[in-house]
Every structure is written in structure tokens, then in C-alpha cells.
Length: 198
Ligand code: ATP
Ligand code: MG
Image 1 (cartoon, rainbow, N blue to C red):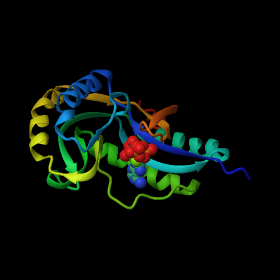
Image 2 (image 1 turned 45 degrees about the vertical axis):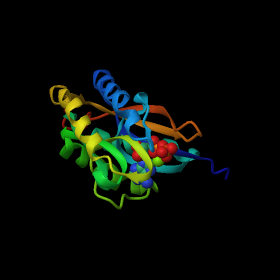
Image 3 (image 1 turned 180 degrees about the vertical axis):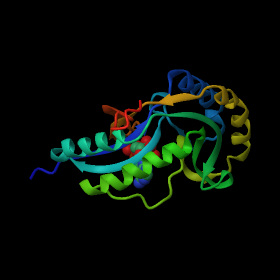
């Protein structure tokens, strides 16, 4: 067994218009927190399920299971909005933009993927799902409350930019010194299931 492992995850991609608005906000405020490493605009996504290291030889089976699970979930409408810090704005290690719509559907889908992929050897999530886009990571926790307050205003137009989630993307992540590269392996449609939705 060669056992080559790929680092994999499943995500919802965001529309180009939304990406541009976020990129402008990040560009504007990116310099304010020196210890923050900002996510490149092209890398922004909502993670549904982090799969982690997975044997390349078993990829086809994994992919089949993802397709079956996605087919049992209907497309849904999502919107982004608001921002915050994990674990808290005052001691942030991660800055995020939230979901203002579609979070229940996203959580439902994430939960289904989490449960179904266990059958093909993927570790289950130990934390509850919270739909978000990670926009920055901090090497050391920092107080980001005033930055987040300013960003909040800049992100207001997102309320008017809902979008339809019709598919998820199966990504391979290649970590490197200049940050991760996400390679889309497959787009997987939602809701082509027996009820004929989507
Ligand atoms: P880096 O690790 O270099 O900071 P990254 O976190 O963007 O980059 P990955 O670690 O490959 O790249 O993660 C891919 C996606 O999966 C990201 O959205 C990340 O937040 C999420 N993720 C990574 N590890 C976990 C984990 N243990 N649990 C849940 N989600 C995770
Ligand atoms: Mg990571």
C-alpha cells in the first residue's frame, strides 16, 4: 500500500460579486492588524466539512458517498453578513464573516455529510457547525473589536446579495509556505435526489 494522502475538504463557493465586495473590505482593513494573515480573495469559501488526510486510492468511494449525500439535499438560498472573531472579538485567533441566511440548511447539509462520510472512514466533527467564511488568522490572539466594528459597516451591502447554493465543491488543499492552494477536484450538485428538487 502506497498510502498517499490528500488533504481534502468540502465547501460552498461564493458568487464573484460577493467575493469582490469582501476583497475590497479586506484590502481596506487588512493593514490594521499586523499579526493577521488575511485569506486571499480567491480562497474565500464556507467550509461544510473538513475531511483531512485521505488515501488517494479510496477517493472514488469517498466521492461517491459525497454525491449520494448531496443528492439528498435540496438547493437553498444563502446570504452573508456580519463579522466576528473566534473565540471572541477581544481575543481573536480567527476573523470571520457570518451567514445571514441559509445557515440552517448549511448546518443540515454539513451534519448529513459528517454522518455519512464516517462510513468511508472520515473522522466526525466534535464541534457544532457554524457557517462562516474565515477571512483572517492570527498567530497570536489580538483585540480586533474596533476593526470588526468598522468592517461590519463595509459589509452591509451583503444583505442585498443573497445567492442560491446549488452545488458544493470538493477541494484538495495543498499547504505551502506562501499559504494554502485549494484545487477544486469536483463540483457536486445538490438536490438531484428522488424527490426531483433542484
Ligand atoms: P492554513 O492551514 O495554512 O492556515 P487553511 O486552514 O486555509 O490554511 P486547510 O488547513 O487545508 O487550509 O483547511 C481547509 C479548510 O478546512 C479551511 O476552511 C479550514 O478552516 C478548514 N479546516 C481545517 N482544519 C480543520 C479542522 N480540524 N476542523 C474543521 N475545519 C478545518
Ligand atoms: Mg488550516
